Image (cartoon, rainbow, N blue to C red; front, side):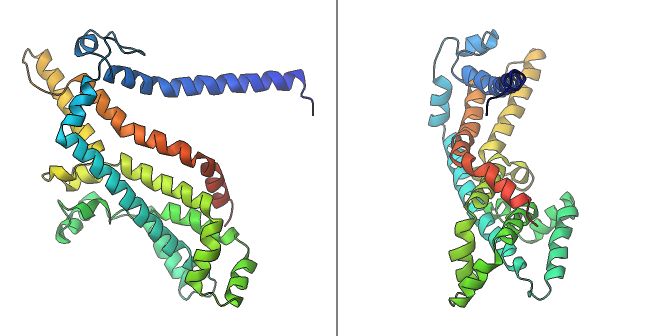
Length: 290
């Protein structure tokens, strides 16, 4: 079909708007990358905008030579993999039984699960509970409390509802029990949704630091990269205030801070394009059924 001139102009306007949005989104990342590759003098003189000035990789060398940075990056990667795998297991195990109409107490289970989505005990009761369970200063405190998202479970359950009932009946006629039906029928057909939810969980864990900030204060070996970055920013603020007051304080440089930010965002930027083709399909297919 041949488009009219007005339709072509509208398409070009949309393309122009998309390019502007992409450019605006990329500007902060480009600026941070340029700052991480510039000299300390150039950063102090505020000469760095979108291109490195007095190019060097000293900031990255400092990070890679400092055990606390490399340890934090490695621990965050391990934590992200563990949390994503556990969260996906819990989400699947919670969503699949709820599609059976003959499940006893189904309405009660649904009501209890949905209730937790809208109401929570609050920060202080959660802290006291985790303290009584002995999870403070423990790696499990960043794994167990948030291992299931009700919102993600509802998306997956809605997608399971959309799979034809005849496939489940055929599997049962072949002698498949619930677990074999799940593994052989439902999971292979749910690849887009599973990939999308895995991305949600992975990004949430990689970017999360509030739980570590509240529950891990002394065990620095368990600090994720985002908490380390938060502490760096707090340190930089203290240095700036001291400098304004006429004091000199040793601390991290702007270049190191920018390089740490790059280490924190680059892994997600690499992973996202690999799962992008599943992203729209997964959210759409899981959101329109019910």
